[in-house]
Each structure stands twice: as C-alpha cells, then as structure tokens.
Image (cartoon, rainbow, N blue to C red; front, top):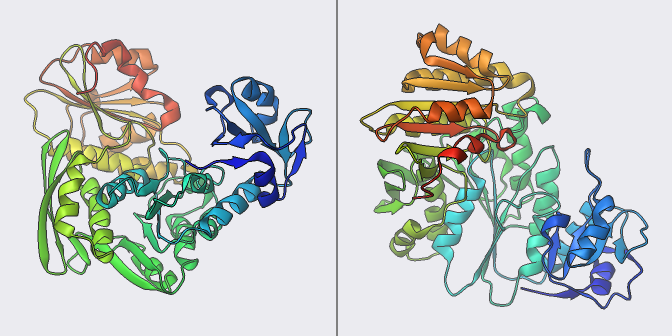
Length: 457
C-alpha cells in the first residue's frame, strides 16, 4: 500500500488546497462517506441523484483526511476543475513509474471473473496488484495505481463503461501491455444503440495499444472482425472455435462449485478444474491460461492454480436453503447474454426434483428490451424448467415469448413482490434447484433471506 500527502496529490493532479496544510497522508480513495477507511481521500462526486459534496462533513467525521471536489468548500479539501481528470492524472503519474506487465480487462460480461482467473495464474510472492472487487469506473479504476509498489510485477485493471469514450480514457491511464475483451453483449445497450455500438466502444481499448502490446479476444464472437481490425498489434484468440489460439475442447460440470476444463494451446492439451460452473467460465479461464502462455510461464502449473481462484460474490453463488432446496444466486448484474448463460448452467444440471427459474428485470436495455426478452424466452424454453417465476416490468414480454414457444402457461408465475417469491421458495424441497437472476438493484437475493438458516456451502 502506498501513501502520499494531500499537498503532493494536489500538485500532481493540478488541485488547490482549502482549509488544510496538505501534510495529511492519503492511504485510500473512497466514494462512500459511510464506508470510509482510515486516512482516505473522499471523492465528492456530484451525481444525478446524490451530491457527494453534501456528505463531506460525514466523511471527515468517519476518518477521511480531506475531500476531492470541484467546489470550494469550508472543509479540508482539494479543489479541481474535473474530478475524473484529476484521478486520471494521478493514475497516469503512478503508471509512468511502473515497468511490469499491465493487463486490462473489459467486455460486456465476465470482466471480474476473468480478472480473478488471471490474477490466480500470475500470483507469485504477492507480486500481483488487481482491481479491488469490480472497481472499474472512471473514478475507481485509475485509483488502483495508488497501491502499486516495487514488489509488483503485474497489474490487472478492470475497465467498465456506460458511454463511448470511457474505455479510451481509462486505456490512456493504464497503457496496457496486454488487453482483453471478454465478449460483446447487450449490457448497457441503452446507451449505445446496438451491439455494434458496444463493440466499437469496447475496441477503444485496442485502439490505444502500442504496437508492442498484445490484444486478446474471442474467436467465437460475432464482432471478432471488428476487434481484429482495431488492434494494430499482436493478436491472440480464445474460444470453442477450431481456429482459436487457446481452444476449449472439453467442459464438464462436476457440481455447483467445480467444473472440469480441457484446453488446447500450441498443440498441447491441458486438463484442470475451476471452482465454478458454466461453459462461459471455462472461456474466462482460457483467457488466463492464454496470458500465462504468452508470458512464458509454466502453463501446466498455472492451470493447476486455477482451482484455487476465489470467485466474486453473486456470480452463481451456491446456497443451501433451510428447506433443503439448492439456490443459485447470480444477481450481481443481468443482461440477456448473462441470463442465457446462467439458464444454460441450470439446464446442464441433474437434480431429482424440480428446476425453477426466477427472473427479475434486466436494466439499461432501452429499445433492445423486447428483443432481449425474446432471447431470454428462447433460452428458457430450451432449458424447459418446471416453473418460471417472473418479477418486474419485463414479465409480460418474457411470458408471452415463452407461451409462443410452447412453454406451458400454467407453469409461468408472475410475482408482484419479493415476499411472494419467498413464499414460493418455501414450497420447494431438498431435491429441488432454483436459479435467481436479475440486475443487482432489483434486490432479488432478498427473496432467499428468510430461508437462510444454512449459509454458503
């Protein structure tokens, strides 16, 4: 962990000090005044609904040493013209001093899981620095560089976006030596108009690469031709396709916490396990193995490390409910692509009892909403679970699509509250399996809370 004085930070990012001598030490950057770590710089973001400037006093009371703000305040603070640009300047300054490998990961789905797989295969003697959780925004991703030290050989940064230009700006800060696009899907499509628009925005990462860098993308992706064109450097691919440089040639789900994967790379085959279910996760693991191979590491040893990967929360989390029912909670985020992937995992499972799908709304689809719901309906009809519970404004679209595809209308239940979903879950038993999938803000995991006498397994 690195430290810097408030005054030095202000000098780097072009800020002005107010009500502070600047000798206070910054150890962390925080956005939430309620979860301030000791010696934090509180980033006072003025959002559409909440103005962080109104919480500076709370942040200081909770341990922050100063605030980063665009306003002149009567509190210890660093005033800058633009907070995003200030954090980017600081991140770029720290990046300039780093000589190791910088790996940036973006994509519509799988960013955080892929980052964790990469970190696991590269981990040596605490020499990997990775984005914390899913801190991948313009405010949080550059701040990763605050924590770089001389011991680090690898930095793995996760890059997210909700508008064009965001990935480009982050890429200019991180200046990756290896860049990964996991896949092009429909997340946040409301802000881009089409999947092709998303593809072009994600490819800003490739456009910013030096000629000496490496671009990695899916050979299976519908937009692989765009990614190939945008990368003016060495390129490698992963996927199920025969022409993939790192090819997934085998996958088998062992249980909810373990899968077998077989890869072929450079004509060599590798067999290993990962601590999660889903063919899409096998692809994410393939990215990590491909990077290990490109870095000249012992691929066999790296594959063996993957079984120890700590997967992020609310991604196919396996919980045993008090009535014995098995619940799969995948409610960190939701898009048509990620819903279909989760339903596919359900369909691959074998249980003696019922299979149930519980879906809440997928947000930020815009004009793509109806098409996205039709995509989800096709996936569910192919999996053909015993019951489908729908909660939210998209229920009518999905229910209509299911019926048109021949799924029994009597097995579709439109739920009007989280509590009604809980009541249904109480009717399930120890032979049954339920998948809960929705965008995070829907709060779908609350439906299982009354049945959690037994925790994570």
